[in-house]
Structure formats: structure tokens, C-alpha cells
Length: 299
Image 1 (cartoon, rainbow, N blue to C red):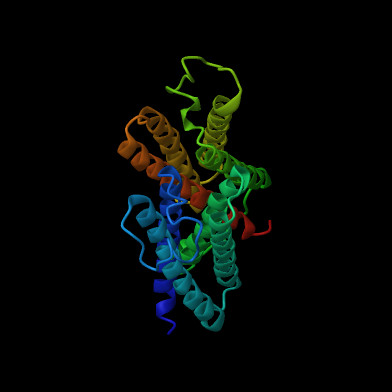
Image 2: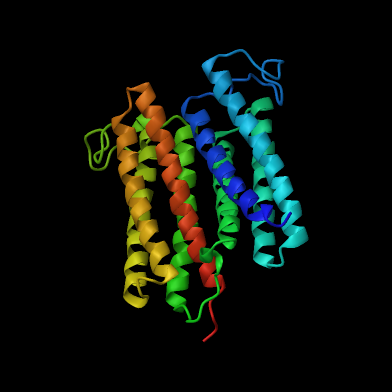
């Protein structure tokens, strides 16, 4: 049974990635009510009518159900056969976050909730994916978190501040989607043709997210420059910082493409999913850097 643990860990990470991407699609396609106000049934059936919105919402539910079963099996095997405590922490975090977001998703269907709460749903999904990714890494060479050299205390602070702040920016992005505020800023990089638009309503929400995303790019750029200065290119800290910078750069560009694609429904949905997928990768690398700091050798 032990040989199945790495495979199940990988499937869990892939499954959480799919849940996150499909959840973004549900929001972008406004398919959250595709099954009416029923859960777990969809319009009174286990297999609903083939409308686009019900298909998207039901597919999301189905994937969540399958991944939950995989997570349960992984949880049991990890606690029975794996001695590493971090693996147990990661699978526990994955299961807890998945269950919370599943309950929130069900409640959102039965009792419609505010955009503030719905935006948190994506944030929990992101945390679940990050935990599952770290679990999968445990069974690879990248999962050897222990170090032979100490990490500078200042670098640790930068890593954690950047990771926490990135979560705030992600939440703001989810809030933009759930408040249907994307159209508040037409054009990019200008907002409605202005450097600083009137900060009210949807325009204020989108513009706040744009400024926050710009500051996140600056933070990760600074993080990478510090890693490049103090650690060799072969160091995991250098590697993680570099890919965080690459992905946040792609994130900024994909955000611009999302804005440019408004008016073309299919392109808007596709670019919105890409935007969510990239942010998952970026946050995953930042969480990886956070874990590395926890295993720092004491000088």
C-alpha cells in the first residue's frame, strides 16, 4: 500500500488544481446557480439536464466529490505509513480546507451569501491546493526541506510578508469576480482612460486590485533580487523566488488580457481561468519558500 502514497499525493494535488480552475470557471460563467438552490441534487436529479450552466456547476461538484474520496484514502495511508510529521500536517491541511470550502459551497447554493464570503471560498481553495502541492513535493527531491546553510532572518521576513500579502491580493481578485466588477475599468494599463479614475463602485474595486497587484509584483521582484544576491542559482530559495517572479509577471499580463478580452464571452472565460491557474502556481511557490524557512538550520 505504501507505494500508492506518492501517486495518491500527486492525484490529490492535480485534483485540487482542477477544483480551483473549475471553481474560477463557475464564477466567471455565472454558473453558481446552475443547479438552482439544491445540493447535492441538481434540479432534483443526480444527472441534470444538459444546460451549460448546470453542466459547469454539476461537473465542479462531481470533481470535488471524486477528489474528496482520493483525499480520504491519502489521509488514511499517510497517517498509517508515513513517518514525516510535515506530510501529516500537509494532508490534514488539505482535507480541512477542502471540507470547509465544500460546506461553504453547499451553503452558498442553499442560502445565497455576500460577495465578501464568496470570495473567501476561492481563498480556501487556494490554500487547499497549496497544502496538496506541498504534500506531493514531500515524495520528491524538492521535498527535502532541511538545509545545510542558514537563511538570513531578513529574507525570512520578506518571504512571509510577501506570501501573506499575495493571499490578500488573491482575495481582492476573487472579490472583483464575485461582485461582477471587472467592467469597472475598461482598458489597460489605464483605467477608463485615466491614470487615477474616480474611486467609486466597481471602478474603485477593480482599481484597488490593480494597485495591489502592482505592489505584489514589486514585492516578489525584491524577494528575487535578495535571493539572487545571497543564494546560489542551485539553491531552492533562488529557484522558488525566480519562479514566483516569472508567475507574478505572467499574472499581471494575464490580468491585462482578461481586461482586453471583455466583450468576447468565450475569450473572457478562457483568459479568466488562465488567470486563476497562474495565481495558483505563484502562491504555491511562495508557500514552498515559507516551508523552507521553517526548516532553516539554526546558525
